[in-house]
Length: 175
Image (cartoon, rainbow, N blue to C red):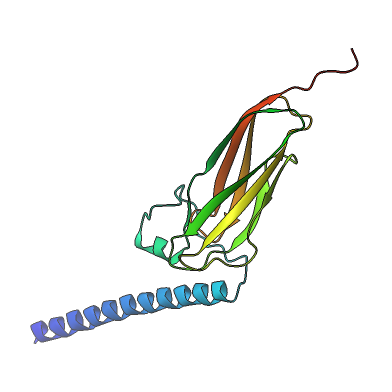
């Protein structure tokens, strides 16, 4: 008789464990669908709470497939040597290689001399986009390194672009 009750208890325990796992899977599916709907509706500010890993092109775990991925042709541009006062424009091209629409919330530069311009509408899966960066060398001299930080609904949340080059100082006309 004890053995019969023991079997019943084990069966109930296993059924409870299966039910708990099933509920967790359903919850994860609901969260994933909510993210998809929000992204399709164009609601910016959808930033996953887990967005902390330092990689934008490789998936660390299965949950990474729930994020868009910005894949750039290149993330650094070397503009060479220019004269002080020259303006350099460069366009960084990217593709959304993830499984969800990409929403760029903002792009900021490390200095007011560098101005980024980015797409304001969602980029569909497989779609392409451009981030144009304009660097004004007025008042800048010698080696210059500027960064543009792109905040999006990706994992990680921030992607960094870099431009570098040398600025030849203008002659001082007051001498």
